[in-house]
Image 1 (cartoon, rainbow, N blue to C red):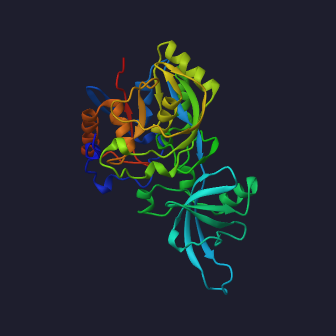
Image 2 (cartoon, rainbow, N blue to C red; image 1 turned 180 degrees about the vertical axis):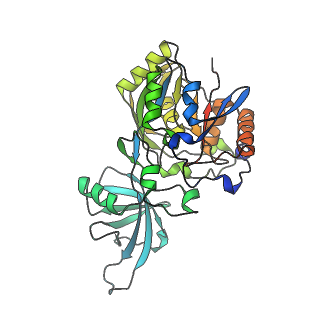
Image 3 (cartoon, helix red, strand yellow; image 1 turned 90 degrees about the vertical axis):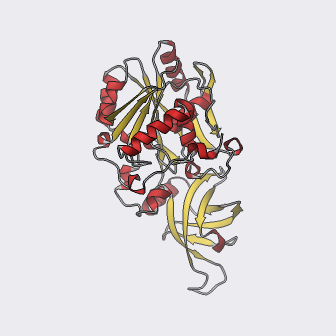
Length: 353
């Protein structure tokens, strides 16, 4: 298929820069193969059945956007100084981080980027369009310093409209975030609060937690017209033994598995071993879900509205069908749903056999 198959015109004023309050007040478009219903996230229990199971990504977003000043050894005070913006991507396991640095061209090996009196990093080199740096702190001391000076790494389409602020520290984090490591939020989960989770559990719907550390690569554009040539970014994830057992037991009893967010869906399909089967799993996944993909453990999906020509648009088209998703998005735009990370939600129920 071609990249243009997943394109659509989106009015700029439909891009949400703040979430709805309370979280459950967001609108929710419910789509089946032959019907579209306009609802709200607070209505979610109307569409679930006892015995179903929601799969939630419990990753925690780190304040991974940093603003610092480059200093260069051997130069007088005031010389060799430049402002540098760093967005953390992933640690390499050896005390170093892959990051996006802007402007990368101003950095040379050995430069020091100072973020605060406590936190600095040494530039070690380039890896294609990324930078490799080593911070001066590790462990809990690094986490504490990052919390003090870091900013929430808002997506580019929000950051272009406004800077992150203190409110984003709450808004851009799920209420069930547990395991630090993501540099982007699993945004479909931002619609949940404790009250809604209690309602879901009380009606007999199970909740299973998995962890996928969402990377900044989720925002990278697809640059090839033939989508089969696109290479997905890898993200670390884990499906525990308990999570796999809960999912298999739900399937065996006839319940539906509905991941909340494309990240949770990609993870459980990475861990699936066959139709209706899933095993404990841990590692990096670069699974690329496009039309024609055979879903093994997914019966539906709760997700926000995605960018044109994005891999996430391809994923939802794989679940519902390309033509059906065109109709869904036409309806969403006509009804002025709010798009992207802080936008409204959809519940996609393909009624898979």
